[in-house]
Length: 162
Length: 440
Image (cartoon, rainbow over all chains, first blue to last red; front, side, top):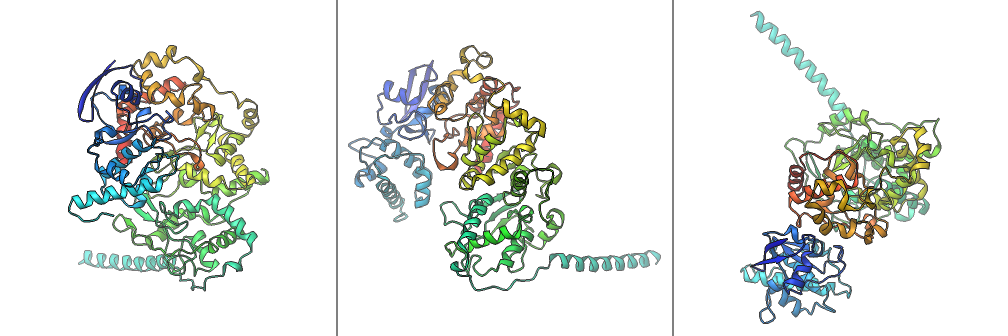
C-alpha cells in the first residue's frame, strides 16, 4: 500500500506492506537512521520516535496505522551543526556510552519536556522507565534532561527550572 | 385551630423522635479516643511474630495502598480515587507524630475490626474493614508487630478531596451500620482445613471481594453477590465464581501459578490492579496461597466438576492459535486487520513468537478476550500490562500508537480469531469511552 505521512515536518510517501514497522520504513526507505532496532518487541525503547507528539515504539507501529500522521525522529530535533536543546544537553553531560539507546532516550525525554518543561526527578524517572540503557548511563541521562529543562526554563524567563 | 393543634402534636412527636434518633445515632457514632501509648520498642516484639506478620501483611497487600508512587513504604499518601472523590491513604509506619507509633494494639485492632481510628474518628471504607473485621486476634497481633517494627517515616498525607458533605466522618457510622458485619469468618466443617483456611484468607485479610464483589450505590459490597465480579481502577475484576465465562478453564494449579507469579501458562497474565496483588502474593508462603487457590477454585466450579477438571484441564476448547491466520474466519471477516495485527501484535502474539516461547499465554487462552464485556481487553491494549511481580517482559500500551478504530478492529479480529465467542458490539465507542476515562 501507499502511505503518506509527515516526517519531521515534511510530507513523505512510501510504498510498503501495511504490517511493515514504521522503524523499517524510517531506516530503510527514508534514510533516517537515528532510531535503532533493539528488541523488536517494545521492551527496550531504542526505536522510540514521536507519533502525533507522543513517544511510541516504532518497531510496534505498523506503517499502515500511520496514514496522514505526524512522525518526529531524532533528526527532527536538530542537526550536528545546530543540535536541539535536549541534544546539546546530552552532549554536555556526555550522556552516551555506546550510544545505542540514546536516540530513543532523547525522543522519550523530549516528549516529557514538550508536555512539562520542568519535571521533577520522580516524573523524569517514571517517564523514562520504558527505555533501557545497557551501559548504565542513567544518571547522566537524567542530568542531561534536567540540564535541558533548566535551559528551557531560563529561555522562558522563569529562571532556573531545576 | 384544629389543624394547628394537630401540627403542634405532630411537631412534638417529630421532635421526640428526632431526639431519640439522635441519642441512638450518637451511641452508634460515638467512639472514644484510645489513649496514646509510648511507641513500643521494636525489640519488644518476637521476631517470629514479626515474620508471621510480614506474610499476613503481604496477603493483605497493605503496602500497595499505603505507599505513594515512589514514596517510602507504608508512609501512606497514595491517592485512592473512588466514586465519591479522592482519598489519601494514612501513614501506617510507627512514626509517633504522623503514623501509628503511639497506637496500642487495642487501637490498631479497633481500626481493623471496627474502622475507627485511635482518636475515635471513623475511617473511610477504603480501608476494607468489612473484610478485616473477620481477621482473628492472633493474626492482627502479628500484623501489628510487623508494622510497629517498620522504619518510622514522618509524612502527613494530603487532605482528602471528597464530594461535598462526605468529609463529615460521623456519616460513616451509618454506612457501617448497613455494611459492616462484624464477627469471625464462618467455617464449614464439612470442608478440608485447607479450604477453610482459604476461605478465611479470601474473606478476611485478602479482601478479594473489595474488587471482585459488585458494590451498591453507597459503595457497600453486595453480599448476596459475593465474588461475582466487580470493577477496580477502570478494570473489571472478573467473577471468581461459576458465572465467570472462563470458570471451567481454571483450577487449583493454574490459580496458584497465577496468584504467585501473575502468570498462568495457558491461561492469563494479571493486568491492571491485579499485578500488584500477585506481586504481594509472590512473597507469601505456598501453603497459604494454595489454600486461597483451593477456595477460589471451589467457588468457580461445583465439587464434582473439580475432580473432572483436574484430568481435562490441559485441553483448551480450541487451540486456534496454531491455525494459519490467512485461512481463518477472522481474516475473512476483517480483511485489512490481519496485516495490522501482524505489524502491531504479531511480534509477540503469533505462534512461535519469542513471547510465546517464554511461557506467556497464547491469546487463545487469555480470559480477557472471552469476557462478555470488552473492557479489560481494551485496557490491556490501551495501557499495556506491566510485568506481574516486576520481572520479565511487559506488554506495552498502544494508546499513543493506534486510533480507537484501529484498536476496535484489532480486538474484533482477535476475538474472532482466537476464541469461539460472539463479536463484541460497539467496540469503537467503547474504546473511545475507556480512553477518555484513562486520560482523567
